[in-house]
Amino acid sequence: MDWLPATLIGLGLLAATCAIGFVLKHRTGRIRDTAEQPGATAPAELLGLGPGDLGERATLVQFSTEFCGQCPGVARSLGALAGEVDGVRHVEIDLTNRADLVTRFNVLQTPTTLILDADGVQRGRIGGVPRPGAVRAGLDDLTGSLHV
Image (cartoon, helix red, strand yellow):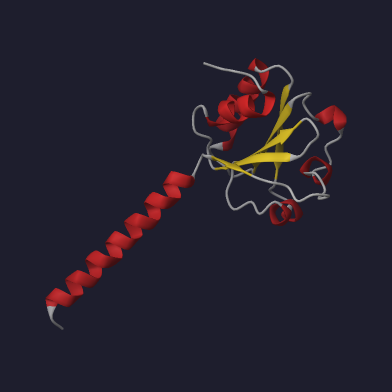
């Protein structure tokens, strides 16, 4: 086999792998706006969260597992953020034995964070560790607060 075609194929595969990795890394930790279908069941109801479990203005729902190494740190930061913003609550849900929720919410990685409004309707979603300021910006948009 001639070495030039093999080298070009190897370099092409390396470039494609790097491009895919860059795209996936770029998407991780960013808020994706989610529009609920009219009449759809609110995620809070599907999670078994009642009105007493929701924040007055917003709720941060964090999906975690027992084996997630990053989840405890994310839980601390989301809990601290919820404590800083009036009317916001943080709820952590362990998906280790909850395949029904994994399927229903299409959770492909943990942590995954949902941002719910006061009515328990999903308004945003973050896959992976949230980027600094991303959750705060999402809450500011949802609650109408301004944070500098």
